[in-house]
Image 1 (cartoon, rainbow, N blue to C red):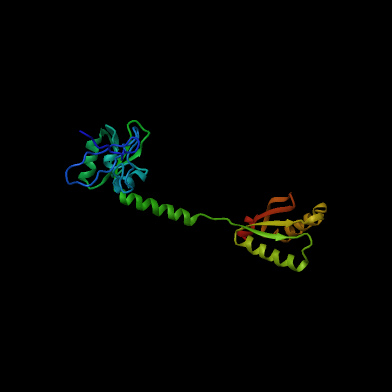
Image 2: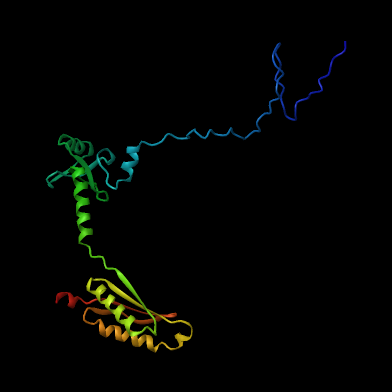
Length: 231
């Protein structure tokens, strides 16, 4: 009996899936090499996302309530009085009974020191104090006045007038005299100009940094005179 040969051999390494009667011609299936994995779907997530509230608590520097996981704490009540060393669950229950929070005050102590307080009120008062401290903070700015060795008298007068106003307002003034080309070989006019500026501003300013040559720049810094403010 003669047999027909199938000349349509599968590609190298392929597998022919047996055909069933009435089915369409099978497609060769190439096996996946060992040690490889199927590509992950772009929408799949390898790990569940953390709860947003948990992330918000992690950013807080202060440990509160259930986040205090030591067996016992040295407790301070809401009035600032020492209660003593108590088990942490008992301290937490005392805070809950009063509708307040248990806040860790000193984590490095043994046992840690905790206080019963209204944490929302504590944060509000802390922010209020920080805002007040920033408001009372004196910010000193440094204004710069640029000159040239050959600056004429009119421009010099105008710039000294501006520097006078800066010093009266409490700002420092940095004078910069720039030398160009061969002017650096003759710096005497620059030092002479600095001396003149100092003399004309001595009523409102004091020299914080004496004239100093750095590269092609001669720099001097004057600060407000505290005696002038008293007057």
